[in-house]
Image (tube, rainbow, N blue to C red; front, side):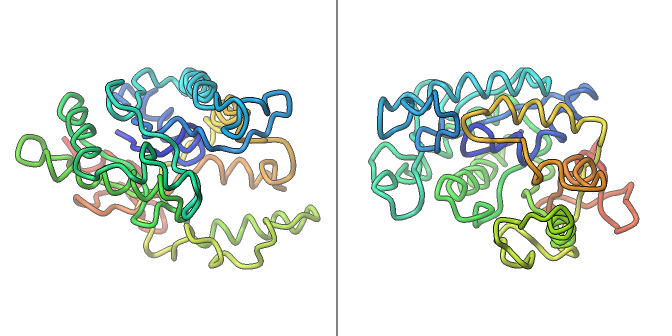
Length: 279
């Protein structure tokens, strides 16, 4: 089970992981906490969908999410609350949208977690993937998604124990490689000179696990293209140089925060299977 804040977060962070395990026959369940109503619209002809205009971006992003999941081979995807409650995209911290009573950030933690706990008991996942306590980069919806995922896992523990819990992360060495590759093609990495400037970059020794499957990079790119209002996959950042892009986008990294780390391991001592040690 993966718990994400908005449509597109799942593909960026876990597209290879989701497709990899779906193809191996594992049940993959995606829970998306909001419809991403406050996202920026990158497609000019769809600008009218923005929250500042017709406020219809959420329903369009539902379609984008369904298209992306079709590409990745994931059939079980749903919004938090199973249709009985709908949490709205909170916007960035301190914004007017962040103060709306129907925003995810303003939702009662126990109440929101109880909806997720109910779904967890229906699905009974062995593995849970979500963000770290900072939500990767500090977005309130990412932080709240982390909070409810961890709380829901606690709530159900007397009935069902999720045996391994992972947080998304990216090792500093990978970010550094990306910065170098961008410089080779004459582009900057969003103006960032060193990997430590990214809040989601973690020291390599804190990365416990990697899921790697370069054969699925094309599918991940197709799924990202499905999120057209949010992601532009053209340009040097996604291509990078010297085929580094294939390697980077074909690997997804995690920190194991609950459960036992188990082999097989790669040369860096990282797990290469999130289900390792489970029988």
